[in-house]
Amino acid sequence: MKKLWIVWLLSVVLLLCACTQQPKTVETPAEEQTIEVCDTLDEENTDTPTEARLRAMGLVDIAEMDSSIAVHLVYATPYNFLGKQLYHDLNKAFMLPEMAEKVLKAQQALKKIRPDLNLLIYDASRPVSVQYEMWDMVKGTNMMPYVSNPNRGHGMHNYGAAVDVTLMDCTGRPLPMGSEYDYFGEEANTNNEQQLLAEGRITKRELENRLLLRKVMTGAGLHIIQSEWWHFNLTASETERQKLQLIDF
Image (tube, rainbow, N blue to C red):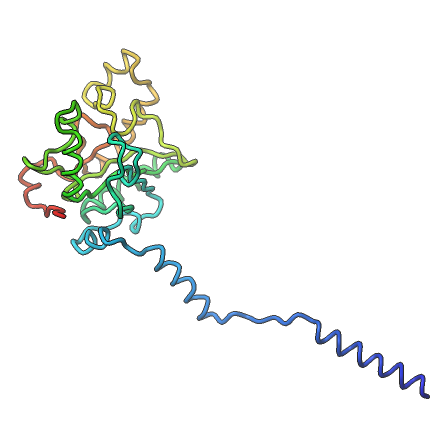
């Protein structure tokens, strides 16, 4: 009888130990999960002082309208034709709402033609203070014709009415366009491409890429300038430009 009692006691002890060691599952309340997600989104979307000022002026962040449009602001890095970082607290591509609508339309047209490609934006809104800094750096050099002199008038970037853009493949690489972005030579021109092709200075594939970019951008109602295959304006009219608000800071 005593042995049976001992066996029963040992069984109870082992059962209690097993229950104590079993891991306890705790579910996270749904409302706590939602708060974590919102906090993360808020942190990612926090504007810098410059971005906040652009937003307050009524400009919009194109990536918020379509996250498939890639943004890499070259002047937010030192890897540009001036060799200096010019945007210190600007990493988003802001532009006028009507400009953004046209860029969005161009992206949608591109996806219908080539689902594997996306637009890649190199520059958009540019504060006037940066324009002065750029002009001071090119003044007296052979790059003067390619930078708007803010003392005589402002470029469309200074109104949020211009975008520098190229095509990007599904691996994140820009397509070859016959010249690099911000290359200031004949190979970047759009008015003599057939001659450039005939002389072997650009390839057939590079010209086809340019024509595709131009097709979707101009098809959306934007205007290209002859000296830069990457640059598109909201308007080609000086009268219309005078109605726009300058990003004067």
